[in-house]
Image (cartoon, rainbow, N blue to C red):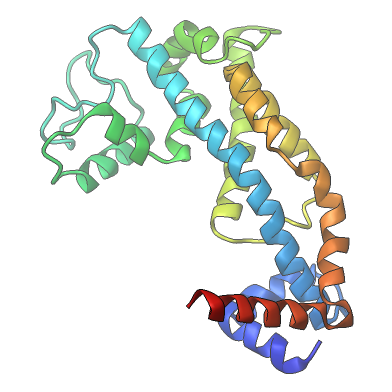
Length: 256
């Protein structure tokens, strides 16, 4: 690989970020760094669909189950014009941490005239829904005793709702941290527990919705990840990368 090619890639990616793909080893060539960079993108691409399905399924299952068991309750305080007003006798539903996140979302949507639950749900990040599970706040403990089986209808309770909720919450929190690394374009290619994370995501989707799990697995290509590095490496052999660039340039000229 020509040094100029690597230098130009580094110019766009940045030296600090690209250096993280040296996998903390010594003597790794510039070519290997680029291969790791591309490999990381391919791994992230595959996980994106699974993570999307888990996040969307989880937040909708929690909200739908809440509305089922707490008919008429305003989960997001849409009727409250000032989100800073938090302490109402026997009306408070959220922990301080979740309330801060909810207030932030409502503030960002303050100019929307027809604010509804759907818009708030789509704006709340994965951390909000994870916190609902992780929190030891008594309000959430009571809520989960009612809605757990509806949110996770395919989960077999082993101990009790309280204890199993903690087990599920820890899995989801691990996935949330992994998701954040992917969404911030950070290296995940060298994580030794990729298979465990992948299996946890698949399991969680299945606990919520078996059909969504089937859809996810139908288009999941995690089993091909082990072959990706060899495939990417071949693109750098015998100037195949340069040949591909020339072909793409010709196609682009024809389109124009």
